[in-house]
Image 1 (cartoon, helix red, strand yellow):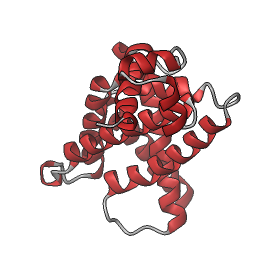
Image 2 (cartoon, one colour):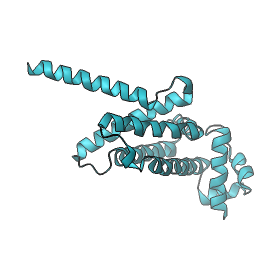
Image 3 (cartoon, helix red, strand yellow):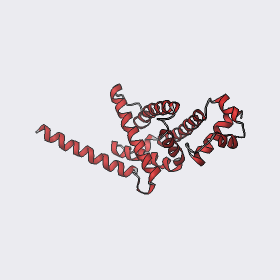
Length: 198
């Protein structure tokens, strides 16, 4: 590997071991076996390098998630059953990739102070919303505004569950609890709709 790749590997290691905010440029240099000048030459700033490391880690997680939910044939026929099974798989991956999510929350805390972090988070959020719709709804035809709304909904759900797992895994949501909540909300909406029809 060249210095660019070495820096990325070292930055990912630091993210897992020290987190976003506590990682220094010297930490990355030590973990990567490179030098301080390499960071500026290849990435411009330490933040840009850490952002690239988070993006690569998230992409690895996304690829693993795609493989985990790829076998649609074993999913239940009913939509809420599919929802439960898909989110169970998402949450199982949370447990294995917890340091990535903790690092992402640390990065978010920097958006008021580091403009490039805000830009990174905005791009990552938009990509996540599109990717979640593709992943969890597949090729289902939806109007663009509905597709965007569903992406925002899934991303809000993902972010909330992710935060629960980072803060308190013992009491965090499960696929079953999310499905139970969704089932209750849908049934309540149906009752309300029936009442309005009368």
